[in-house]
Length: 119
Length: 110
Image (tube, rainbow over all chains, first blue to last red):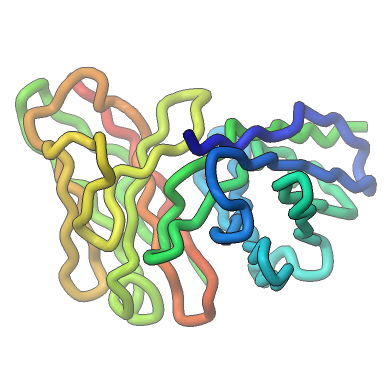
């Protein structure tokens, strides 16, 4: 069965970077784009960007351009999201989500990774 | 790009029906049939409930249905169950090859 398993919670100081991983299993990793979505405490979902695991092509939300980098390692079916220059308002749960290729929805989600930004 | 507009909260009694609206623009909701709806229980990841405006993934109850008119999409839940109590988010593809979500609606089953 399809599974997206994310790395564990992180605590970072303001100005630092965080890198979250998302390991896929149960399907062909390179056949589906992977998206990253975050959710601040008590807030809604916010789309951050996507990566095509086959080509490595990316597209980021304008808000995060210059601070976010999405990469992948096809040998271990894992996608990564790195966010730099962390601020207190970056504290959130970060999710990876698979895009169904014949439509534009997110059919499977990781369990989420809590990133705490605190000095 | 601003989030899609959803009501902050809706409520209904068991057995009743409720509808949640999701308003965007011609650049997102109105321009594509790529509207999806997600259910999120506290502390859990979102779950896909509706895609392509009105299609249901396998395993999702037929009590959930979707529709769209112009720039506004809607999610209807009929025959409310206690376990339907959750946050609901709409999402849409946009004309800049990005995605956007609504602000979320908290459904309370009275």
